[in-house]
Image 1: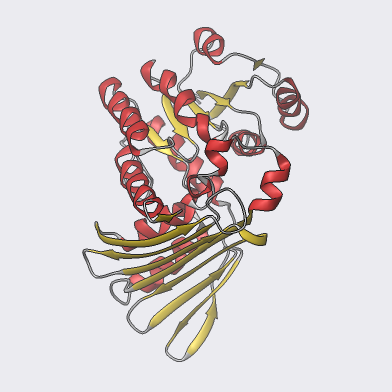
Image 2: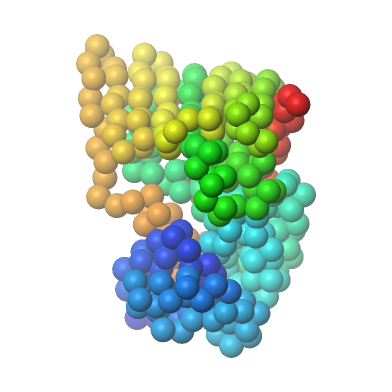
Length: 316
């Protein structure tokens, strides 16, 4: 069996999650990882069993002959880390966000198009077994008519952790809530027609309250909320269609209602990260383009444009 030579850039929690999944694939040889922080490299070595650890990305790219790389750096650095990989012609899956602006994401897309590599953004909700199943059942009745998405975290806890620079703290919409923006746009499956949003700095110096009403050209209406004044993380979705609705709480449990009855949505046997990574590896192996349901960089530009449109509703 021919194995793909793969590396991971970023040995934090998300990076180690990718490593653990990639180690399960018999057709992948996880040859190296990279992180400038020694303690993070040590965790990758101890928890995942990776021995070939680099502290410099360029050194790793110069030394290793890679078929693909997974970029899981801090949010504001994803584009900077992915860029030299794309320029060298290495197939790249980068974590969200694919930049801190539309322009930064467009630059990645243009480089990937020029070098001809496969590039994909790790918006794994597109592969979440419960979301995939709910969408499939609802679309079997007809078009999706309305969506609700929420993603909440605590700005107070994040401020005290000192894990994020000021750029990210005031743009948390680009960090984890972007998962919700992307999957809502993907399920709506149409171009954005109107965005009406209000974003505030309510209890902190940072944008911590986000609300948006998004209307798509196909008539689908989306309600999006991201609140950082809360005390805990919460993620939930509603998907409504023709006499059928799905309710997903924390994307760990969900129900779907039709014909006057409520049914549990099966959780599936694999994680969204497993499904996403398996898709990417298959596309690289089979030399196929990154298409829907995945987010290639054309898709990424569209999601980033929607995020910026929501952010434009900031009230100071």
